[in-house]
Length: 171
Image 1 (cartoon, rainbow, N blue to C red):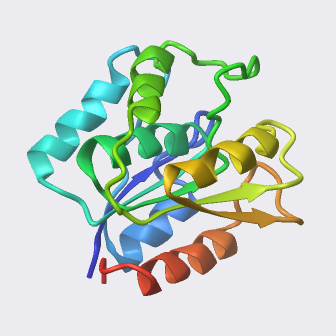
Image 2: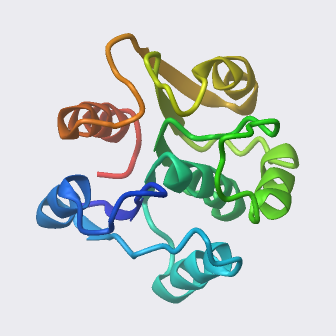
């Protein structure tokens, strides 16, 4: 069974339906992340360092932003939903992590790790167009969901987790 690190979104909770389902069905850690705390990225790094490698990082929105950087930093497969990766994004309420995370994203190594991003084309929080241009150059498989917005239904997480696990050696 794969060991998963799940990172919730900015206005979501670590005990939401997606985290609960993952915890009930996998070996999953879903820590509470206070994205307004400047040390929160390092807190997650400390969790990874303490636990050892995870087999997969899953993140939603701000959690996907963190998760993508952590995937490159630790060479861990990644599944992200609607990451706010546009450096000019003015709606990102928490930009205190940008210097750290964008440095990792821009200096990424080509490491052959499976990374997947799912974008909701109806997203009214994060414009998917930047990600559609940027991510394919970063060894990232991108799926665009026509009928999905910023909120990710549990069924979409289940669908793309199944795809990720079937195309990766994490199971």
